[in-house]
Image 1 (cartoon, one colour):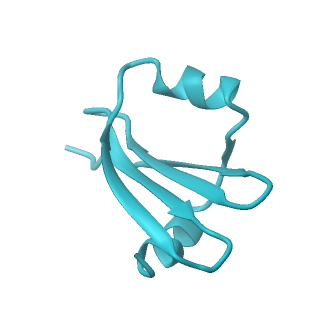
Image 2: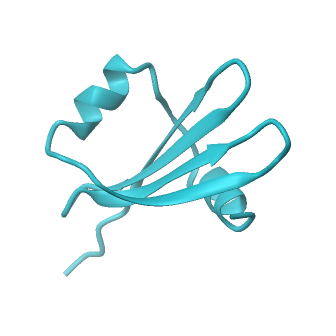
Image 3: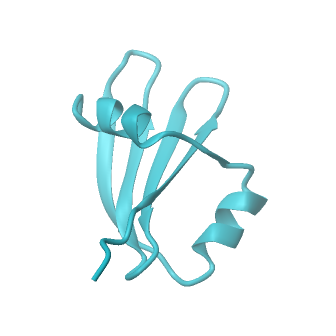
Length: 75
């Protein structure tokens, strides 16, 4: 069986960034909040089936897995 690849999203706010990883199979993932001082908060998340629509409404854009993993390694 093929491995399901996570989807990655990013939104830049005035003074921080939020990156989100979503596993589309079980709607679990991670949220990273990157503060202006470089501090990274990592939170395990459980999403609902509407997460992709919610992210679009909230103006999140897709981002690369590499960018997400680089930031996650700082958490």
